[in-house]
Every structure is written in C-alpha cells, then in structure tokens.
Amino acid sequence: MTDEKIRAILVDDEPLALRGLKMRLSEFPEVDIVGECANGREAVKEIRAKSPDVVFLDIQMPGLDGFGVVRALLGAPAPLFIFVTAYDKFAIDAFEANALDYIVKPVEEERLKDAIHRIREALHSKAALTRESKLVELLASLSEDERDRIKELIADPDWAEKERYSERLSFKDGSKVVVLDADEIEWIDAAGDYMCIHAGGKTHIIRETMKALTQRLDPSRFQRVHRSAIVNVGKVKELHPHSNGEYFLILDNGQELKLSRSYKDVVARFL
Image (cartoon, rainbow, N blue to C red):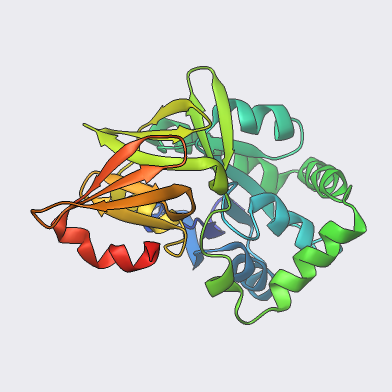
C-alpha cells in the first residue's frame, strides 16, 4: 500500500479555499486528487462515481452541508472523511471520536502532513472501517423530514441555483461560535480588514472580505449601497434623496445609512 496513490476528492464551496487545499496537497506526491466539488450535491455524485479513499470535506456549505453529504451516503461503502472547518471546537465536539481527522482553516502544512499520515495508517487498518461505520451510524440519527430534504436536494437539477446563498451565517466571536439567520442581519459595514455585522442590536466583528460576504448573501434581500456597506432590503423603512444625487436610508431600528451615487441603481429595490 505504501507505493499506491491515495485517491482524494476535495469539497468546498469557497473557490479560494478549494484552490488553497489543492495547492497544499500538491506537495504530497502520494495523493492523487480525482475530483473537486463546489457543493454537497456534486460531492455525493462524485463520491458515488469514483469511490475515493478519502474525502476532504468542508462542514459548512449552503444547501447540503458536509454532514448532509455523509448522511446521503448511508448504505454505500464509506471513504475516509477529513472534515475541514473554520471552527476548531465545532469539529471536536461533534466528530472527534468518529471522523478520521479534522483540519482547521486556513490549512497549515504541518497539520496537513499529520492528516496524510493518519490516512496512510487508516488505509492499512481494518479499524478504519469500524471508525467510519460509527460515523455513518451517528449521522443516521435523522428525522424522516431531514432524510426527505436530503433526497430532494440531490434529485433537484436546479439545486445549485436555489441553494447557492446562505440562510445562516456562522462565525467565530471570541471563544464562541455565533450562528445568525440571514433575516436577522440589519446591515454590514467594513472596518479595515474586518466586517461588522449588525443584528438584533448587537455588532459582531469577523475577518472576511466584503466581496466574500456579498457572494454568500442573496442579492434579492441584501444590496450593496456603498463600497463599504451592505443593507438588508427588508429592514429599510424610509428613503430620503439628497441634492447631490445620494440617498439616505433609514432602517426600522432608526439607523441611517448613505446610499452613494455609484449604487443609485439599487434605489429601485426600495420602490
């Protein structure tokens, strides 16, 4: 087995993260990347078609997330799973005893080297089959509605379009992980290298780019109104024009935001 390639599939909805992981893995000649997937539905099909040795699987993806991918494979031979997550504790609490390994983003070379070593050992060991069976059993504890939802997502040819935007945002805030429903978000503004998410009278500061957040949020509900601000259209109560061509938006919590002339085509969203 030492001379055999480790056949791997990579799954992540973030193109930069996927490219970064692929670049890191290129330093390991024993790893043969046989597939790359940008969402859970693609991953299920690719895993079934190619039967890889290991899947590097992002946990948090819109639509069918990493856990949903594993659930959808119930009854089929299970590959090894390396969970990839931005939140260390999230992976540890749920899956430390069941998944082969987990890697925290951004992926570090030494950490990946450890994961490759675990994969090598696991592929030699029958114990790996037992570990992965336990993982599948753990994820099998679903309601019938959840099972039906997974089947529906996999079968729906329009899934990618319907599920490409996040209904919930998860991010680390100090020592805890905060999960927000998209509808709770009032507005988002930039502060240097950080983004401030305002929701329910609280401000959460995360390290993410304006462009990345824009791609994750449904444009029918969230609009860029300034080069450094995004607003939840449903939270806008009033729109006041200014003589210089700009507008002032008043949110239902009383917050005032400026809509710059560069984004004046957004006005139609509020009329």
